[in-house]
Length: 268
Image (cartoon, rainbow, N blue to C red; front, side, top):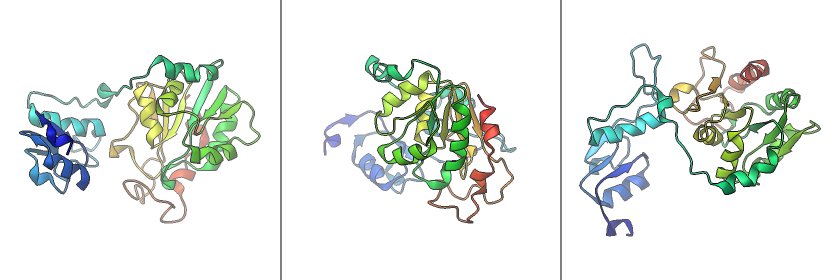
């Protein structure tokens, strides 16, 4: 009702869900752009395909990031707008303020790493035992700081148990505080999950560990110094789904367990 009080020039809907399609359909605008995969896209004036993966060559060696997929909607309205195939041209930014850096300044008194080991989806997270091995090695090079939601605190406490020079800040920092902490880290270690994108927003040095999902889905880090570590194309069962599962469908979880800690350490 509030949105219908305003006549908008353009409406862009980046989601493919019914709810956002309904809101878009009811808004007052001559231009409504969104993806064909939305169940209410029939009410849009401009529509584009949302493809996962979105390959840009027959060789399937170049794919678009989600940011580039979204920019298609601008291109629909302005055909002169060109989308670069270099996804790192579109690194997002966050409006960090002095208060966010002040909040984390006390943790930056020495060189440190940031580790975000949790994920809503079990199969998208590198295994707990591997993160513990990684933490043991990282602690020899600098302080290791864990971040995450309040519900991740127990996991991080288990990973860092009896390992010196580590700290668990799960639940103590908001999203912008966490990004401010990541910005000056020696390196940030994340799964294919939300912290990955926070790291991109502050151009943090990032190692992203992909287990059941694959880079071609289009959600890899956009920081200039970033790298993805995965098992490669050695598993016929990978990817097993777009978002992951609460457990490995085949029970072996090789997409996580076969990623060696030494390979992750080499990205420092």
